[in-house]
Length: 298
Image 1 (cartoon, rainbow, N blue to C red):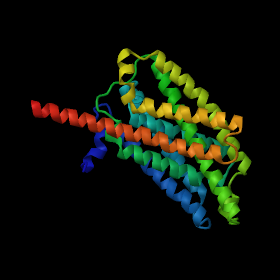
Image 2: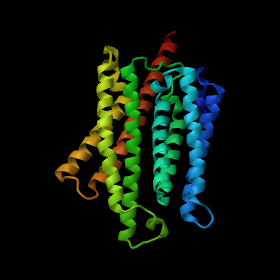
Image 3: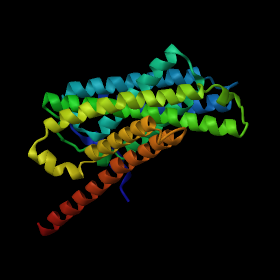
Image 4: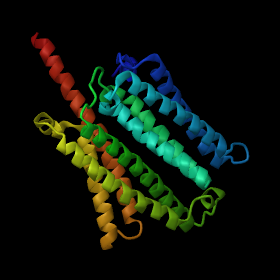
């Protein structure tokens, strides 16, 4: 088994200073607290208020923004080449989107899905830090490559928002069919609004991801092309691109009517996570085997 200390392997990167480490860990902790408060606000609404979760989530988001400010100051573009921090940036996009939307039109039920999703994202990202974060890794230096990474991060954030809306729509539909008209379900946005949100996110996410791909491929070197099959970031992004295309084409042609495009979004989310995490673990395992063989020969 991997030692417990290995879960904190990314902390040993010399570029990660004490301030950035404190902000990151504080943010993750507060997102978990916000998730618990959001769920409790729906289970025991008389005792726990959603605004407590929103306030905690806002504080967590502020700490996360501070973390990235500290990281870019101390490490330049290095965070853009680190998978751990790219996943954290995608979570930041979702957190900002939720907080902005909740201020424009408060929807109590959304927080009960947004904050648990954020907690899962940061929890998995944190535990798999040894796979995603490599101490001393350099960040991108080409402007086109930087733009590519930023656009891919934004597309992931938008897709996470679409996934959350799809889950809410399916849960609401199931509950209504079973005639369970609970206060929790009544606080959901209308079915049409949720499905429109999913479709809007797909319409936004696909062009953003496509432009990001074009910029990335233009800036690729021969070494980047050779390493592409073993790059979890690229493979997961390609899977996401195919999912977005399939969902939009399927809806436009009528092949994915009703709930089918929502199921495709959820299946796509699972595929992205599997390709992202699974391939990352495989690559890490192979690297460890090669390193062990090299040490044995030495």
